Length: 160
Image (cartoon, rainbow, N blue to C red; front, side, top):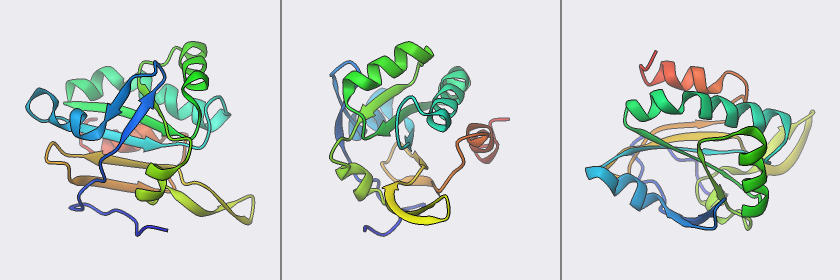
């Protein structure tokens, strides 16, 4: 497994397909509008209770996050068609990206051993990052909780 990312590290660039089958690159997101900050969060599976709660929280906070100059993308191993159903079913406003081979997750150390119901398993490690317009990691949070995470991130970023 790749070493965990930390503030100051360069964020590994990626190009993934979103829920509309468009390609999205981190370097394009951070380079847009003269430099944007991007929240990249990794979650295990669309349409599961925790992941739905987290995606809805990000969608509900999107206006204020965008007002603070932040773009939000969520990444899971789900295929684009499932992500599109997830967006439609839950009325999500954030961009959802597909990483079916988990290559980006592994590069960001968001896939590997984790504890689940007292057992060690391989899987997606729920993680959130804030990437600066220079492409460097500003915030790296691993093993975050689905519920209440967006509120905590907003506090950590001084947005509340």
